[in-house]
Length: 334
View 1 (cartoon, rainbow, N blue to C red):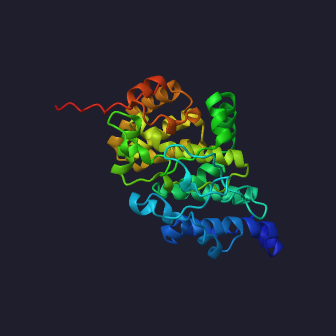
View 2: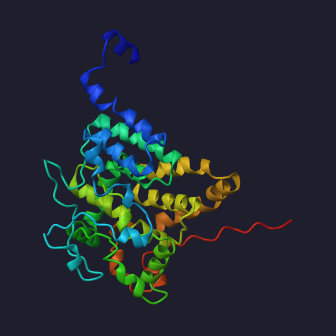
View 3: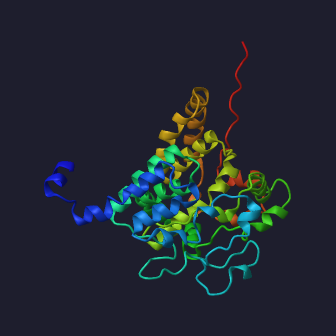
């Protein structure tokens, strides 16, 4: 390739437009620009938009996993299909919501269409970036979207075959801070109380998930949104902490359930960031549990978690065949 470019004197236009923009992705992977602007650089380099246009997007990383109190006060773009304000919804009962209306030929409000080469560039760039910075939710999200098309299709097919899954696809409910706010008022022992404790103790907010950008089909984009927004419910049900080991264990469960390549890449690359003792624990203790738990559980994409917050957590686990994670075996002292 390099030799042919040298003999030709210049790169073909399609290569210049699609591939050479990855210099911005290289800057992203290397940590420059700063984290707050990285998604804007990624979007600008892979969609043809200017950095200023991408930077104006209301879903930039400034809104990702910040302190609950400050994140909840941020203005969110309107994702509802209706024209009324989202605040009119009763707590715990959201109107049918989608991904917003796309403009200028876009499939939905946050859609960023890519060519195949741009998709490959984002996939490779976000994969290397996520390995170097696993706490970067924007890179993990981009990796999932650019590599998960077949998995999203399989998830949609399963949801279409399931009565509750079909209703989720039809209604397109969203998990937002407003829709789960009543969980903080539920008594101990309920699913909602456990969820509120999980989110509140970590200063997480349901509004802080990165938006879907790189999935062209609107219904598949919603499937991606749904899998992203119910992730914290899975933490609660499977009793997985948000440590590196806990996240990797849950990614194993998620891979068994969804077949997402991003989960497999996380599981393959993540253990190398762990010290040897924790790596051994992940492989010998967490992996067998995750395989069993993921295989045994109900289809996690076909559950309306938000409608069961008032119910007893242990009863839900039994109903949905959830196997919570076991404590790590204690080491015997010599």
